Length: 293
Image (tube, rainbow, N blue to C red):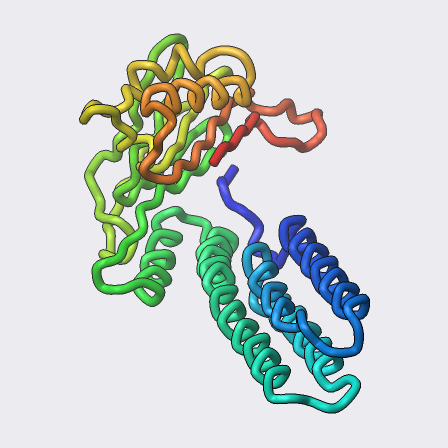
């Protein structure tokens, strides 16, 4: 089983739909106030807030849609009943400028998502993890600056055999029968973007094994200069209950350790190996997976 996310384009997220809905409500509210106030335009400048609202939740295309609608409403209200005046024209210009700024802001997450998609699709095109690393390295080299890099841990399970390729990423932790085993690579490799030459680490899995993958936000979480003891606490926090329970325990302990103040974002994946599926059973995953961010 390769750990990978589908590279297909996804429909608009619930957050984006909520942002669009809120923007339409805002435009309707401002329009209602303008109509109720009388024929002279007084509030059309407020329409400029709608594109910024959408940019918080959605991408640049949705921003342009809302910005275009806001501009059209501004022109309609500003031109009635005696034609477009200079103050109204200035406010309409502000709506257009706000739309342009918000659209440029919306291109940032869209660009990031397009680069996550360029990484994900590689897993479907290469059968060997080292070939995937080579492709990802080229993609990162094209996408980031000279001083930027991306750490990565690629994990594959086939028939109970776990293969890990690590490019400068914190080593996953294997939890087995009360023991916590850091799955360090046979040889250190630099992050993606620096042409890593990797050597896989191979482990034979047992039913009930749990695997924790995490970003350096967890590895570097500290209080008063002391790092969170992830490996020392891993079994007590993650070795019991469901994987969801384990992640919740880890999160609570971490927040308590740093007194509620984290300096970096953290992504966590905890998996439990259920063993090979019988040949007669319906096809299905052999892992229970939990994630947190």
